[in-house]
Image (cartoon, rainbow, N blue to C red; front, top):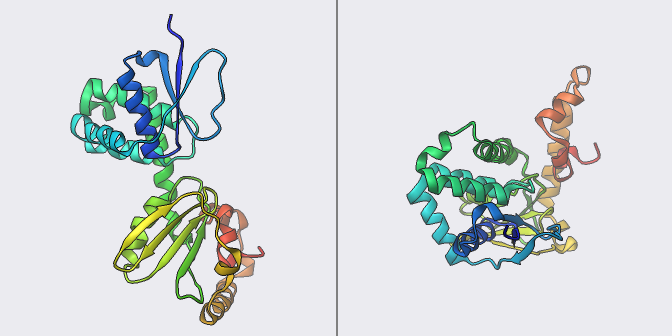
Length: 256
């Protein structure tokens, strides 16, 4: 019996697909291999641990194969599953692609298969958060003229938020900082957007908001308090519609 192999990769779409490429090219046997993403992979006494460097070219080759040999919808599932926060996502994506390359586009119809079922749950989790997450993003105008927002989503929403706000605010210079993952998306007018990793913002700079921003936040808080009907307050309902995890970056909820 072969020694099990665990491919350790970066927690990103490119990292996971690089590991999928490495696992396929090894010809070692899918049943003896698994993939784990992130910095906190648990070492095993009974498995060979193989680190995989992120290779964008190899990741793009896998992506192209998914689109053309399986389907565009399968690629959608892979992309969104890679953004989820769950620890098993890398290996689930690997198992899903092994099955998909074997049966083709019909793989997404095999809902009774536990791997396909789990892929759909990962995708749904990211989509559910995405659908109402944008309404909780609060940009603040800094004295430099840049619009700055802090977010702390459960799933890796920054790439999706970048696409959304680049379309919504194409003529503004803005930044969105994911404080959970220490990533920042920077958008410059006329130059598009990009994401930088392992970033820690200067608290003094991001707290230096313009006077108009201070006044606007004051008015917004007054409006929020004024329209509320004290006798009809329902904290449980509010937390279901506006999860508490987002409150720290929403001016109207600070101090609640």
